[in-house]
Length: 495
Image: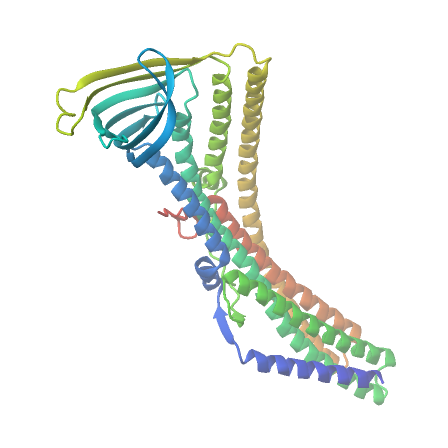
């Protein structure tokens, strides 16, 4: 009865596998190695699109900042501005009366201004023309012009917070940080692609092994049943072979499911829209190169965004503290301008013999009593700056430790690959010998199953070690933004 159930189950699996094979024939099969997989992910993957958009955002923010440092030229005006209303007017005798007014004004002004990061002030130059048309009920009207051929001046805060000076220090760091972060994102894609690659590769190898184990288990069960029928072995050994065949069925089903899931994850990560099957080649050749921990740490500090991020965080904390300090002390705003102007009833006369005009003002803002509000804000900013300083120092220490530990781990996993490969080869040889010896009755089913389990364990250990090596390889590349195998920097100068 058990044998009948097993045969029915086996037949079902064969039909399912045949259907799977038929369906797989309808889709493309991609034969890839690890490097090809990474290249496709870095070209078409969804993560690279996120990296591109993030970098473009930072790039244009930096361009907007650079534009603020350059002269700004504007043309402003009102053409036309019509007003027909009753408004209060002060008469020559000082009385006020409501007068019905009808007028149209047109004005245009060209303004050139330049911010000064060093002082936080601004200089400007402008020229403009204004015309007013007064209408009356009698039909007679009046036209007047006001010209400003040239006017220059400046606005200068004194003892105030200079926002532009701090932005000039922080913005270049932010942009350089985004450039290096973009390079890190690409290496992160390579690292993740390696993980997905080995998930599929190991699932494929497990499925191949499951097929072999299934065939061998079925054959051994048939042989055991025949030997039992002639009284050469006990029933327990036959039952053990039957159990082994049933386990092989379950392993085959699970391996098929694992491969399907891993394939879907890799396909999505690589940005492949259509359904495909993968045929992956294991990267069993380990490149020979040494990594010095001191050199790796120096490269990481020079190439990674972390060092720039720590510097930026300190500057941002200092900026907040400087702003809080500025809010606790008196501030002044100095404005001065000099220009020429003239008024006339026609356009020809309005630019003749212009009169000079000067404007000077000094505004001030002096805190008198805010019941400790400004001082509290300053103390909060100082405490925050101290906290950021401690965090930055600790982050630098943690980063240094991580680089050193990762270099040490890389050397260890490289050695483990060779040991795991040797163990796998020995386990394969032992299993082959054990199967032959079982067929001639030299060993028991228990000994054979032990050899089968050890071969499976050794296979998993070897490909796990191989996966760990390549993951460590690409993690170290991302950690230092340096290719130690080819001795080239991985920082991308993207514009």
